[in-house]
Image (cartoon, rainbow, N blue to C red; front, side):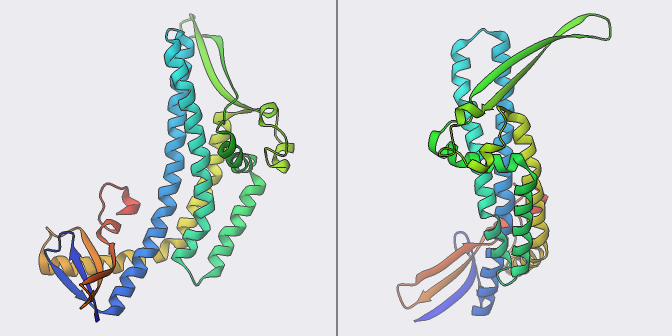
Length: 283
């Protein structure tokens, strides 16, 4: 039995043979790029959930103001709770995997992992919102509830022409009394929790800390990401030079011949350098 290594198009119309060393280089580069991109993918998941919370808050506010469709109001409340829960869960996924992704890019460089670890510890100490969202994960995972009360306030505002206009403000809150005791919530964070927490203020503040961690992680992995992308691009360019641009969705394959031509390993590479459905940092 012999191992064969090659790059192939999705439907196997064309092949480009590789040495075992080239295969290993491509596999390493793909693994590192996967880890780099996962950092931003997961942070974007946090931001997407935040945007859905904002949109649902705006919808709920209008429904409360109009007071015309009680059924729609009751349908929208659980959606807000679900989106907040999704935000909390995605924030934990992002922070809990961050060091793993950085280490995946730089497996032999303990210093960068130590830098990120120190930054995460400092972020935890400096930001109550970061601590609270991190603590809220266990509460939400168990109880499934992240919002305890909502309030609609209004006031009259004088316009430039002297007329008055009523201005509304809709807010959602997490209530300290409804969280429970230390058995239900992280005791050290519970001690510093106020009676009522404005949901949107909390999430906006948490985003700032998560953004800092995201930016640092990308900074630490930037050089290896660029090198890995260049390596993959070189092999893709060679393949395209031989077989044409129509073969632009490429895979690397390790096949064992003489054993029913078993495919031992297979992974994509084109998606890491020319996926134009993603923003610039992914291309």
